[in-house]
Length: 164
Image 1 (cartoon, one colour):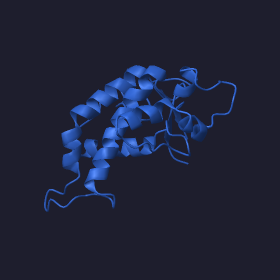
Image 2 (cartoon, helix red, strand yellow; image 1 turned 60 degrees about the vertical axis):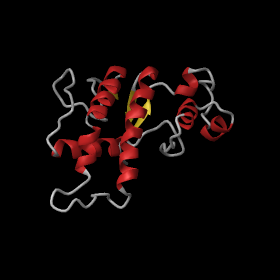
Image 3 (cartoon, helix red, strand yellow; image 1 turned 90 degrees about the vertical axis):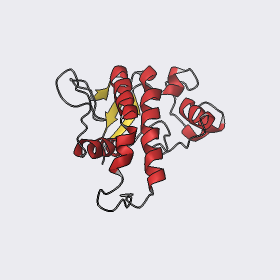
Image 4 (cartoon, helix red, strand yellow; image 1 turned 30 degrees about the vertical axis):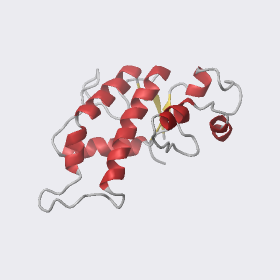
């Protein structure tokens, strides 16, 4: 199984739209406008992807792949308190692997500042042919923006937990 990121506290529970002791039914929450992530993304005119039927989950492995592309181009993410480069694997030490609220915002800001550099990594230097992995450059840059928005969104909900 791969790396996924989950809001540390589910936004629907944190906002009192979903009882904590009930099983979360994302489809019903979306249909009844009780999914804060879906509501926010739709209002912003963006798609919601999610993982395993849960829109507020993020495919952290894809996020780390984006960061790896930037690292290979010479851009390193900020350091965590323990001296590692921040990533979707988290920025904290201890039992729970998580990306703290501060880490989410720090990574989102760093990714925003490096958006042009990321777009530049999508082209081969020798031919200017898009390195689009079968998706197209537009979709890949949209997914990059999506990752930034997701990081900003989960920060107020305690950041994100890492789930394998």
